[in-house]
Image (cartoon, rainbow, N blue to C red; front, side, top):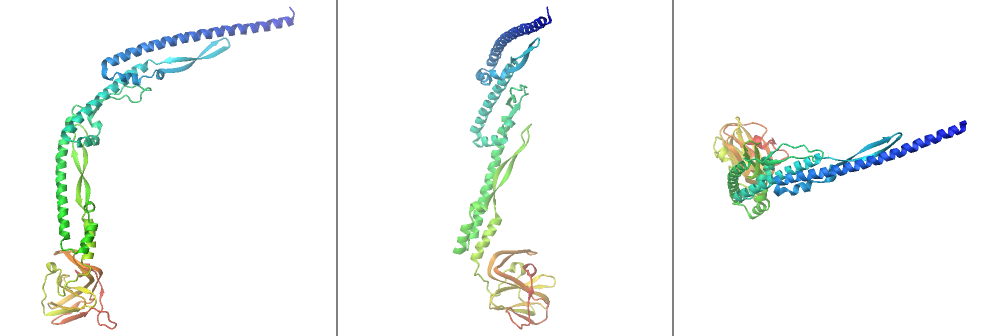
Length: 416
């Protein structure tokens, strides 16, 4: 055999080898696919048999919740796939292998059991709560929502069913929880009645106070009061807290509304009312509006005569111990003499218009000083200490170009 024929023979042999081995590979691949298919049929049958067993077992134990197994069951979730390689000689092919997880069925049973326990617990919770609502009233629902369902539950140990179910918790009703909740409702009702009584008293006090404030008001001032002072504005709500110790659980506090009189709002409103009521009001000359505090005396060897100009003036005289020993109101364009013992004094002049007898001025050693001008207020004083013995010091409170007396600035705090 010459070399050419020999080469052709070798090539033909190689081609034949590859052809035969390829057909052998295809035959092996076909057999593998048949085997895998038969295994899948067998696995699925085993799976369905086991599914029927688990489901029957669950249904026997949970007759009223038997539907839960079917609701949770989804065959597709138990299936997964992996690649397998079939090789022969130089040939290889990938075959997709179908896997069925039998553990999925156990997880379905555990999850359905957990759901059944939870449903029975929910039914028990709703039934017991309905009985307490019937007994105590609708506020039992509100308090139950505030307390939260967890206060009534005992959480059971979790059965791990991942990756199919991330949450497989179950819970039952704590046997003592509704006893504690009933005790809470009784104590809350007593506390609520106490708060309601307080609110009634506060409301009555507020109404009495408004009636008192209205007395003596003229029509314009009364209109200002009625316009600005409404119950919804002057009564505000603050939270009081009903505290309860729940045996074996955390303590908590439940807010309940308690009314409170907003005195700042009333004071601000009454300032507007009195501004209207007393805008043109003036005391008589010689009146001593702070007599309850500074006394009503007007005697002494010496005297301080004051002649007013265009403004009403309240004159105060303090001794060297910084105590007011005389005071008097002098209407515009009037004169008045304050009689004092011989000695050394400081003299103050409080000007303004519209005398409000209810205006708070300051707290003093003798109590609250009440009464003051509404507008155009100013305070001045004789800058010099008045030293007087058996004489009369006369002040004329008008502007003058060449006068022999000028006041210096002062304050209500210094003058009273």
